[in-house]
Length: 333
Image (cartoon, rainbow, N blue to C red; front, side):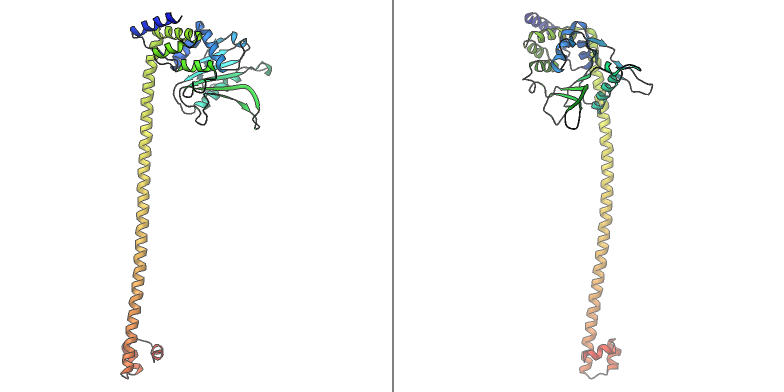
């Protein structure tokens, strides 16, 4: 198998065939919904979910569009929607880039599918598990080093209330290092992160299962429909990035305008405050200077009055020429 695969990869490289990674959501979808790849789909699910081999022995691929309950409901289209032998619903998604409120979207998708299990008049005993499996190529949880986060409904004491609704996040940015003790997770995370023919050859050497998966990914990479999709997806991603860059630039522009306005307002307030403080200081200095002048003038009057007393001027004359009151003159004697 490996020699045959090596020859096919060498031929693909010689023919300049672009290797299509599974992190492209459409390629992810085409790979796992292909009935010929059912063993790979089953192996992938088995690596990450606590479902029995018997339950995974029969997997039905459903319409990925989640029907609306009413005209006002928000519609959803997911990468893969599956049903197991016992009726468990599986929602599988490849999320290559961060999108605002992505956690809320996946929770709502899970809840929508769970709510569609029972019709009016039916018993709740028909309810089966609704499991979401989301592969992210960005850090989903910054407060955890785990590459696989399993989320179920728990009570305040931490005990599981029900696992009827379950969300699983596979973080490829943390995969491999964390998965070395779980070989199946380790191998699948390596396959998901493959972007070159050389990397695909290396993964194929890990196990017979990976060699089979690598060969099928190679065949998909040769498919003209897949290549066209990948190219259009690349253009869409580029357009989206340009759009988001424009949005970010506009946000930064608005923030800069707001910041400049706040700075101008702050400078204006500081200038008004500084001017008020200067006026108050000048006022205080003027009052102090006037008080000092009055004190000096009073001292001059007293000295003149004392000289006139030495020259035997009458109190009336002293009062007249110094401006001191008669009471003050009497106190000087």
